[in-house]
Amino acid sequence: AAFAYNWTTEDGNIVEGATTLTPTVDAAGMYVLEESDEVYDCVSMDTTIVTEDDDVPVAMVAHPDAINCINSTVTLDGSGSSSGANYTYLWTTQDGNIVSGETTNMAVVDAGGTYTLSVTNTENGCISTSSQTVEEDTNTPVYTTAGATLTCNAPSGELCVMVSTPFDSVVWSGNGQNGTCLTVNEGGEYEFTVYGSNGCTSTGSTTAEDQTALPSVSVSTPQSLGCGVTSVELDASASSSGAEFSYTWTTTNGHFVSGTDDNVATVDQAGLYTFTVTNNNTGCTSSASVEVFDGAQAPDASFTYSVDYNVVTVYGNPLQGAYTSTWEYDGNTVSGDTATFSFNDNGDYEICHYQENNCGIDTSCSTISITAIQPLSYSENIVNVSCNGESDGSISIVGSGGVGELSIVWTGPNGFASSDFEISGLSAGNYSMTMVDEGNHSIAGDFTITEPDPISVQSSITNETSTTNDGSIDLTVTGGTPPYTFSWSNGSTEEDPKDLTKGEYTVTITDANGCTYTETFSVGTTGINDPDFVENFELFPNPAGTQTKVSFKFTENISGNLKIIDFTGKVVKSYNVAGQDMVLKLDISDMQSGIYMIKLESKNKIAVRKLIKI
Image (cartoon, one colour):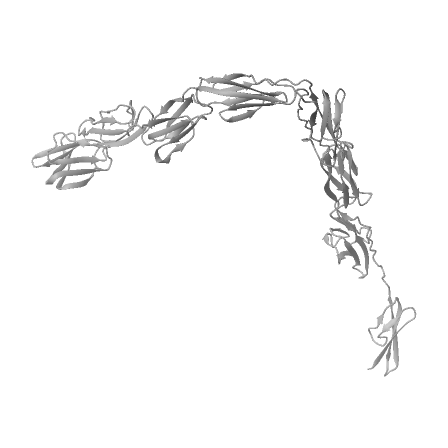
C-alpha cells in the first residue's frame, strides 16, 4: 500500500520534513500528523506536543583586584554565576595565565589579561559567558633627587626626593624619617627607599657635599725690631691661597705700613698682629696671631747637654723674634733649639752651636765624653739532643752591651739559617752565630749540639735444661743516657732475668732521657749431658694435647731410636730416627695426662727431654 504523510501546526513552526515521518521543528506547540492511504482513500490522524526548555545559565564574574608587588596572584570570583549539579565552568584567557581553579567558579591567576568564564547547563546545552580584565602594575616607583651643599654660611641643607605620583612615599635609612625631604648638617651619602602605591619599591641615595673645611693658616715668626731693623714683614704666604680666598691683618697695639689685605704685611711697631684667611665661597675662616718684639736680643749660643748611655741631647737658649739655631757634629748639621746625637763608640766628641738673628751670630763649642758604651757580650744556654737521631736540641742567646738594638744571624748543618735569638728543633751538629748592634759592632760564637750514642745491647743467653726452669738472659747495655730501666714481656724489671723457661722474651729499655730500645730474645732447651753430636733437640708444643713435634739437628748423619717412657719406666711408644736435620711428629692422643720422658739413643749415648701431656 502507498501512504502519504503531512504535518501541520497552528502554534508551532515546521522547519522542514513536513511530509515525512521525521520533520524538524524550532518552536513549541501542537503538531498534527495526518496519514492517508492513497489506494483506499483512508485517513488517520495523531497529535504530539513539543515543549520548549530555554533555561539559559547565568555567568557573572566580580571585578578583580590588580596584580602588583603586594599581590602576586588574584582570585577571579564567579560565585555569582548559576550553580548546581547540572552546571559546569571553564575559564579561558588569551593573554593571561591561570594558576588553578580552571574548571571551578573561582580561578587563581598570576598575570594581567582578559579572562572569560563559560557556564554550561548540561541538561539543555545552553552556555553563558562573562569576561573581566585583570590589571597588572609591577612597575617600581620613578624618582629624581636633589642634593645639598653644606658650607660655613649654610651649615645645614635639605636633601629631597621628587616622586612621580602623590601616592608614593619616601623613608630615609638610618633615622627612619618619613618624607620627601630630609634636613642634614653632616656631609655624606644618605640612602632612602621609595614605596609605590602598588607595593613596589625603589632604593637610592643622594649626597650632602661638605664644604665646611677651614682654610689653612700659617704665620712665620717675624724678626724683632732693633739692631738696625725698623720694619719687619709678617709672612702668612704658607696659608691657603687662590682666587676664592681673601686675607685680613688686624692689630690693637701695633702699626701696619702696608699689606693689610694681603698674605704678607709690613709693620714698624711692636705688638700683637692677627691674620685671618676667609674662603669667600663657603664663608669658612681661620686665624692665627704672631707677636713682634721691640729690642732684639743678642744671640747667645751657649748650651747645656745630657748624656744617656750613647745618646747626647743638647739644649740651646731660645730668643725672641726670628732667629736660626743650628748644631754641628762631624759635618752633620741639625736645626732647632734642641738636638740629639747618637755615638757608636766611647770617646770625646766636639759639638758646636750657632745662633743668629738680625743682631749678629754667636758660636759655642763643647767637648763631650762618652764612656758608658759596653762591649758586646752574650750568654748561651744549650740543650743537647735527647735521643740519637732526634731533632730536639736548642740554643738560646742573651746579648748585652753594644749600641741600640741587637740582631743575630745563625748558620748550621744542612743549610740551617735563622735570625732568632732562640733556635730550637735542632739536630746534632755545629752551629755558628754572629750578633751585631746598630753601631755595626759584632761578636761571633760557635756551638756544638751533641746527641747520645744509640742504645745498644749485647746479650748472653743460657737455655733451660730439660728438667728445670733455669734459663737466663744476661744483658750488657751501652749508649743512650744512663741509668736505664727494663720492662720484660714476662713482667720482670730486672736487667738480667733468671729462672726462665723455654720461649721468647721481649725487653723495652728506657734511658734517663726517655729514649727506648726494644729487642726480643729466645731461650731454648738444652738436655743434661747431651751427646756431643746433638746440636739441637726440642719439643713443641710442650705441654701438648694430641700431638707434639720433635726437632733434631745433629752434627752428622746418625741413626738411632726415640722412645716415649712414662713415669713407671714403661716404654709407651718407640720410633726409629735417621739423618742429620729432621722434624718428627708424635701422636700422643691415646696417652694419659702426665709427665713423660723422651729418650734419644744413638752411638750408645743418650739425650733426654721432658714432655708434659695435657
